[in-house]
Image 1 (cartoon, one colour):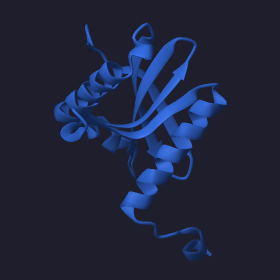
Image 2: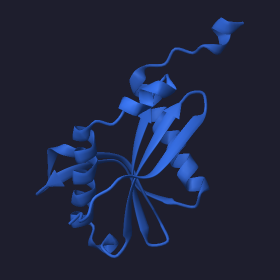
Image 3: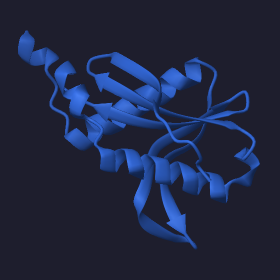
Length: 133
């Protein structure tokens, strides 16, 4: 019986599933998903930094979301390196430069930790910056 419950899924597909679950979670909370898998660009060209899993908005607030899927709760502590934090902040800054209509919105950088089958932990304002643009 245990073998029937254990499904084999590639890390890439399980990561995409975790992102989908988090987007559904945000939709349930009333957020609108603006973009998913946003990659920063400069003059129309992709840059090596600034990828964001998804971007949501609600009530003049824009939320840049990073999703981390792990098999163990203890792995969450090491899930977001300094380099990854900078990538998310750079991606958010790039998005706001390219989308001026969100310039008056308050900004939030949230991190979601997902452990299957359905454990989702959202950390609001996990990343902080004084000035984004």
